[in-house]
Image (cartoon, rainbow, N blue to C red; front, top):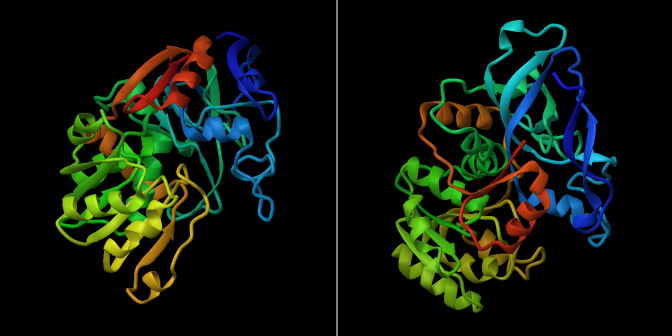
Length: 350
């Protein structure tokens, strides 16, 4: 095994120039940890927002911060990781070496299956934009039997994990009509796939030119994004054939108050993003008079991730890969990612 590896190292908050390609030492797994040789790592909005320090702080929304606040620089980014166990630390079964794994990137607030995420590889600890990464043994899930490619496996953790958490927290099930915003992006497309696979009828919102790909993912109806939120809300209502049971929202912004009146009594609105705007002017009467639940959802629990791994091993979920780059071309990969003119996930190969 090499002593050093290529890594994309974040040196501070800023533009692409603060993400540097460097040779750094290969990490050593501690007790209860495994060393994973990274074969593929996918990009997420979290990577760009963390680099830009775009999360803000309570009481200071313009403050430079990572998603949990301060970031300890230098930091190797990358929360979506697939690879092979290369070495193990004390207390870990040596038989793990050579096994194909997908890594749950979350750090949790407790040991139970319903624990909440409080940190992320690539943000609170070094991640997978590198030749190797260290992870807790219990977070490196064996997917040796999965028919998915390494690139498809790498697309799962953050986007599909977030989508799985949204569906679970929103209690979305078979026979319901669900509206998904941002449906051509990583989390949105994952939500379309997972919701339709679980028997929901999905109405999806996307940009013009991406409709066919979203339908292929399982959407029963597609609405093209527009500048007038009330017109979009009306189109969604017509496509749904009536009131919505639930909304899976990764966009936020002015569509939320415009569409809220089209959610049925007792319906749910699950939010896990604010690409369209973090602040909204909301009439609270539309919530409490109609018993509509507004649910915030950040990533997944260990139980959600374990279910996702089962689906990956069985081949019931197949992420769409939009593009693949070598790690040395991480800047080109992030540039394409930021343009957003693709459908699916962008992956780098170590």
